Length: 198
Image 1 (cartoon, rainbow, N blue to C red):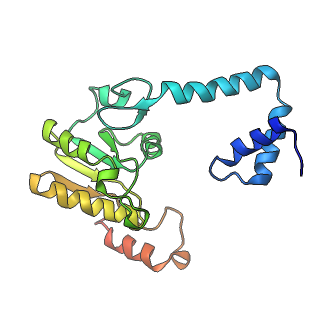
Image 2 (image 1 turned 180 degrees about the horizontal axis):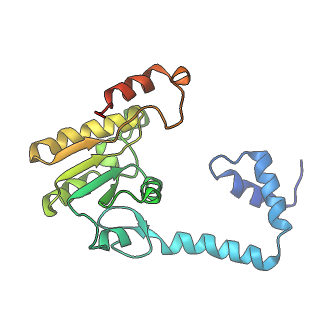
């Protein structure tokens, strides 16, 4: 189907976003056309500002508009505890919980030999440097519970273990409210492994 060039370019831009197929891209493009011009300009400005004004924290690797980020700069947080995550979105998820008062380290990915991603391609080197400089007592490995996340956790664990720093892994298993009958074997196995005393 033919669209005027400005609409085609807008549709192409939307299809570059994850999870946006051609039909959704067309729907979004026409939605934008029906928006007030001020709202469109504000939307475009927010996109540009997010790209220009955000950077990665030089300490932990989280996205931030100040360097170091507010979490690393917070003297009330426990510097002896570092939670290692794969992605900045993971930091945001942990922060929503409001239970964790330590600091973070963002890897920006996971080891995946099938995709050609090795330890040198993620933010591991700066973690090791951090562990030399800071008084860290425990490293919590909160990588995703998939093959890549497990491989990354094992790699970091082997690398850090000789330093004597306590290394823990977040528990995996059944979600709260989940039913045993619908859980797969791996989930049940992880749930049994992660059991604790009552």
